[in-house]
Image (cartoon, rainbow over all chains, first blue to last red; front, top):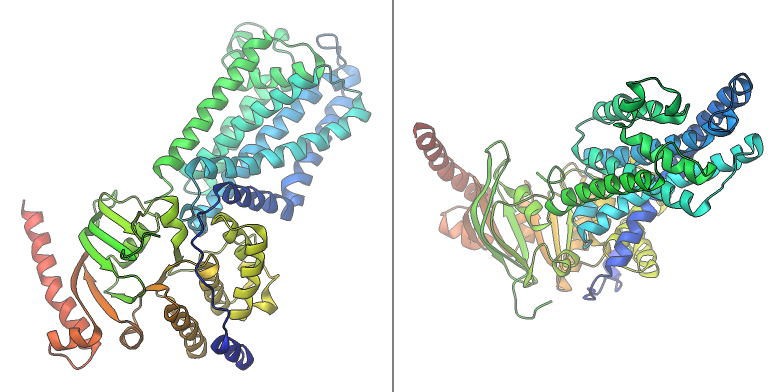
Length: 276
Length: 258
């Protein structure tokens, strides 16, 4: 402190009069959501640009370059068919990675204590962290739609279904990211879940093909892949057709999303893994 | 705030960690409102565990804590407590000013109040030149200033300072205590842990010595010296710790025999 500042402190009439007002919990969650969004925008080249570029390359290489040599799938050109799955995959991975890494960093550096000590209910903490991932996912998803529409002419046959499907998918993976971010002890754990679980299941979940073309037993096994239903729900929103019953696809995605949110909520409610 | 109540009341507080380590062993403590209270003890005695318990940063295994009459995990109690932890735990993605503004938001302040208080704290703690610098780029002293600024931003009535001047140069230490004294004069309750016994002696009205998760002595600095026939608080500290350790070790040995 400079001499001038010391004088200012000594003379400060400004020392705060304590505030007794009850806290406004809505403000506390809003602050956490804004903080999470700030992190995304501050690191936008990593959090938004990189996944948009990589997914756009998939569309260009697999769709536009190779697509003309692949016959139509379910009545759609290949470059159109793969767009919904690619967008769903990018959004799911972003929601998961964002929340998992944000919480892991907050726990490692212990600045999560500023949130845990605050007058914020556990459910608001849960949703505050989740919405950061939701924001990033939709930023990526919308960017990819803007790129893919003129390139491929992919239709949006059922916009309402698409919004619901995307929301369910993103909430599910955002909650999974929160859970993994709370349990993970290192970035290896975070990467393990992403690379060994989510990525393979997404690739095998019908992003690049319709499971109807698979021989038995791979077609049956694909029905055991939870991500297949989520990709199918998003594809229905875009193309208006799906590999399985639409109700089943949406219902299954919603069920898993609710389970994941409940798991994350339990962790915040009890403090398990968050507090020693 | 409930009138006429202590700032902090702790009854039978216990914390056993998952690995079996006993952090707090049925600790009782009351800190009157408006007091400058010192908590002294060796490393591992339970000071930080106690602070983390009050601030809802660990899961206690027994006992009860109330802050100005409110259960410590209630929203009301949380609003009344500000803590500057021992090791800097600043959000590396935010600037100095953002750290303060978001903290105000977490504690339910509206945007205008958060902005106003952030600017006040930036001026008080001489952080103006670094206001838009990311916290990860700050020096150790600057981080310490920001920790204190953050702890005080939401105008808590109970300020908990866990070794706030560890590794801080003399000039900054002097300035920090000037401001903390000012806050205390205006009625804020201060709970301080420090290894600088001369600081505790000159600042604190009441001091508790903690060892093995229990309060082993408590009085005014003068009262402690009289009681232990000591000329300094350091002598009291050494006597208290040295008399309490064998008992703990004996108890542990008995436990091991069982």
